[in-house]
Amino acid sequence: MGELYLFYGQEKLLIMEAVEKIKNKYVPEAYEAVDFQKLDGEVATYDDIISAAQVAPMLAEKRVVAVYRAVFLEEGKKSAAKSGGEDRFVKFLENTPPYLCLIFSAEKVDRRKKIFKVFQQRGFVKEFAPLNLKDKVRWIESRSLKHGKPMEPSAASFMAQFTSDLYHADGEIKKAVSYVGGKNRIEKKDLERIMSRSTEANIFSLIDAMAEGKVAQAVNTLNELMYSGEKSLIILFMISRYFMNLFAVKANEGKTFNELQQELNLHPYTLKKMLSQARNFTADQLKDILSLCQQLDVELKRGRIEERKGLEMLVLKISQNKTRKA
Image 1 (cartoon, rainbow, N blue to C red):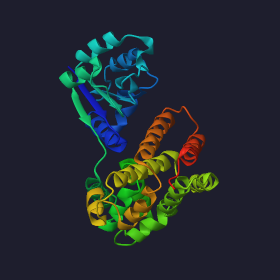
Image 2 (image 1 turned 135 degrees about the vertical axis):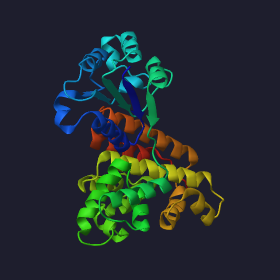
Image 3 (image 1 turned 180 degrees about the vertical axis):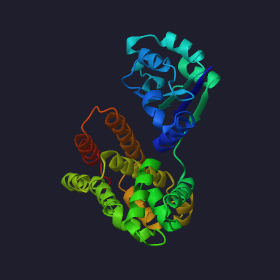
């Protein structure tokens, strides 16, 4: 029987590297054109995948087929199933040819599906979940060394807080390595110059404007972030994370500043600002905002709404529908 892999989770960089490692094990670069094939799981049918997998390797030890964005593994998703044939596909997975290495990747999976159970029984399943802040800092320090420059702990901590995932962090590390040139190490001040330093301040301004119901100011601040080159998903991630932390601060009202800082692992300046902003929201309002952020995240990733329009609607909803406390 062939090899069967399923990688899923939010850390797409780690998934990409895991796929690359397997591919390199069986298919030398010179043979990739004939013995390695990528398929988009959002458009490929079950029959497409089976057809690609049934081709024997011409030059390499194994034929490697990688199916990215396998949304048919998610709850309620049926992209590959539009053409039918799920039962036939499951039977194929249970008896893959020995020359085949078949890899699937997805952001989420439904563990109740028959297909997932086949992976559990016949293959290798691994989740790449987001790292906690401490582990993310360590990863950034290690990655920076791999790219040729050590990074100071304070700089790694700064980068960990203001990058959405490891893919984003890796890009910023490469940018920082290029920026510092002949310097021995990367310092926090270097990152502040190149990582859209104004983003943090603008996020604070955006939250302030929304909290005070200043619609025009909130939209203007959002536009500043967009014009500075920040990607919409990064802006949404930072807004979502900020409101998650704000909700945590709200839920722990009554605790001392030091207790909150220790439990929430926030920078003192950030925590001080959040304590002030938390007074402008009720816990229910913060829950509603987080729900709006989650909904927009799904819509953006599925291409159901234009990025700028989606963010503007989110900012307007938060600013207009919030009942300000007296």
